[in-house]
Length: 132
Image (cartoon, rainbow, N blue to C red; front, side):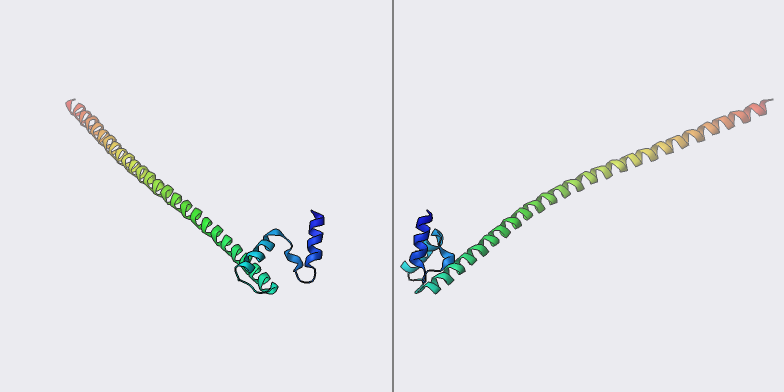
């Protein structure tokens, strides 16, 4: 493998750019030349670099789009959880209101009992004192 790389470097020395001695770049250069996208080595290198840059940008955009989709899904889930939480809180408030009403009714009932007991006790005590 090293011998092949050495032979390639020796063959391309002087006309082939040293930073592009890898299969992907070589295949790109061949395809660009066959499809008349570049006329010389400088155009090939610039076209390759530009293509790689655009691929990188597209990959970043895809990644950002995926993150946005995930955030959207998470936001929808949070909204559903908030709706459910609001529903549960509404039920709790209704239950607390029912407890409050029951407590008020119980307090009123107990007040009425005391008034009647006191009235009965006072009334009997009055009659007992007047009999003598």
